[in-house]
Length: 144
Image (cartoon, rainbow, N blue to C red; front, side, top):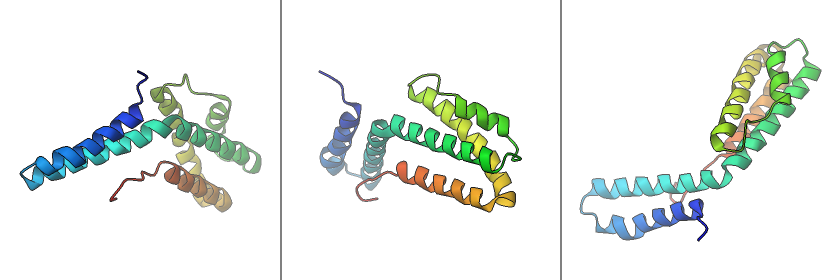
């Protein structure tokens, strides 16, 4: 059998809601069962898209940093942004993608702080990235 973690987590969530929650006697236990079910569904969604979303964010941040280097060469943090643009995650494990992604976000925060005062169009582009990032990572959960 080939394990399918996203499907397994979703199946566990449904089993909790359909079979376990109705058998609980207390409202607290029923609410807890529902919460656990929603968390399992969120984990299933994130498992399925985690690598793709991290890589999409990384590519978008690298594009933003390259554009900023061209349009605003005087912006602080150029060395860090250039290193991020030429770098790559240490591997394909989610923890490795997360570490590289976090380095990009830290660099982005510093650039955004500068752009808010000195480059409104760059600040707008960063906000556009943040909206895309949020939409990409949005959970679509039943009843939420």
